[in-house]
Length: 165
Length: 180
Image (cartoon, rainbow over all chains, first blue to last red; front, side, top):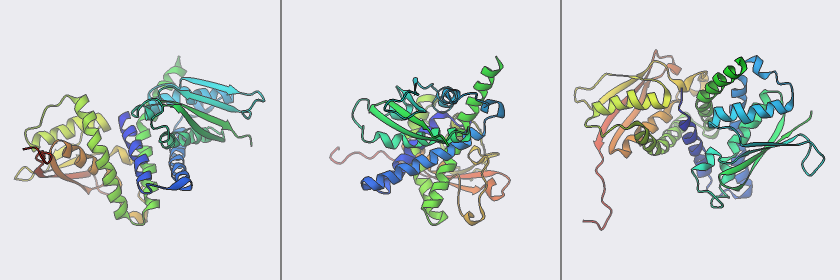
């Protein structure tokens, strides 16, 4: 059984490696590297989802799926639960079927300084996890778009927008 | 409640697979990015090295092992403490050279390769090469220059996975220029 810290070390190295090859990618280049990380996270998320037994996948409501992500998936991947889950089903600025998952001390950001330093670097450390969420949702039969934002390290928010088919 | 119990076990299982699944995604991505297996192997070794030089601090902090006096002690610590702590397995140590500067780690099963099959066009790929880099980087931080390489691999049809470790030399601390 692989120790949890191995994933953190590997993730950090993956972020460094994908950037090292193009130290100054420019705005277009940066997106490409973020989407590579996101894609890898997606495949891992799918695979994690596929390993769940059938009974676990019988979620009654969309909200149950999101709670699963916030509790079971987050504990499995980061040894802690998501700190808050907010939904927005009213017709406000956010589209319907939008959920905001907030982690106040996201483990992949913890090792970096807290506050506003490294704010620019933060997206690189979130891309894989966005993909992970999207991939697990996909296996659970939910199509989504997942983005992340950081106002101050190590707190971050993952925005999950469910795509209605 | 049975649903709670189920949840706990599933979390644990997912957690242990996270590293191996992520590693698999990385190798897949590198195979796409680099044209030949040799370059992928080099990249895995380099990334492993970068991880190793930092992992050693985590290891020393958590394991309370003291300084090793010789390569035999080092071998024991690697197999019985480090591999156990990080990968949950204890490789056996075999095939010591007469001079005591080379040994083999035998892994009955390699957790990195669960569910992995090498496609035909990647016969030179050393899938788990990250491990060699990790060993090399970690040991360098404790003043040992070593070479680590796979000589048997279950992914290639061998019965076991074998990593050959060779002690090259002790690394003396370099004083910064200007210090006498």
